[in-house]
Picture 1 (cartoon, rainbow, N blue to C red):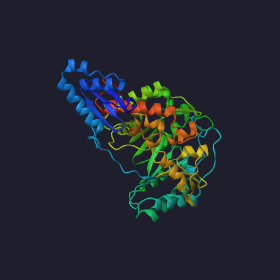
Picture 2: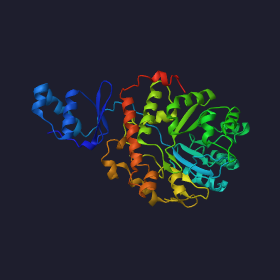
Picture 3: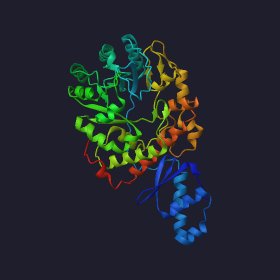
Length: 443
């Protein structure tokens, strides 16, 4: 008798076909009406072979049972219905180069009482040396300058870039730098320098002035949009926009993307503002609305924005995803004083210190992170989406439950909604009104 645990199966019905996600095997199987009935009944514990035989015939039922049993019992996973999208994972070093900021955005995760610490050149260069030695020769090494507002510590940014190119270019020739800035302190000279060093530049901008200035303001209350637009005009090369998306702006996301494209941005990163003053504001219906909007945009755009590509690629990789990210494994966050954390979230919680740039990474803390892979987490073992998701966001789990291996319930809900929606899109369900929503051929 065929049997499969209900928590390991997910039924997805598109406009014309039915699929099952077999989570234990990390495979997606297209089924006909007979196989669908067998699986549905088996999950419910109500499989009636005599009724199915009367409806479909004995040989058809036996053949379907044999094929399903083979799929469920086989050791090798069948070929994925999706193309492979394996990408090299770089060693990532995020430097909190300047915690202070020249702005007072209402949704800032630091709140009104920002820290004012800045990283010294010595700490920054020591951190680069540590990660470069940690990486295997030839690995891509990504160095991110982060804040606060990183351009407040411009001299150390330059010093760190020059040191890295001078000391490590031969060992890691494909490495790159990334500056994430509010854009108000950019100048033509700084833009030319960053461009000459191949630095990826991302500017935080939420859309037109009426949206952007609602939250992104200077301490005196003035909006920053006009200054950002003025500085953008001085830059050459490709620049990415980073949008902090409020729930009330989901419906106008296509118009926001149009606006940013017209401004000259080469790509867009979308960050849903799921928290406000550390309180969750995105509810289940907001995530469903956002997923629907992502699908509408993807269906009508040959090259959708970066965040939507990532949303779809999440379900396209035939390899099992065992971790949500590589925080504390290949990715590290360095505080201004040189302490090492898995990611910025842990630093602001003042938790899970992983060592110091002068003494190295605490390998016991690394082992703790490595042990919290998705197969070892009880809650994940009963989740159909686990190998698309990779398990809990360590920061959210620790913040909510004080433990790496106890996922945030809200995070799980969000992940399942987005994964199911992306699967429906990849498996052929296309929104009918896509062209009316977003019709750019490329972004």
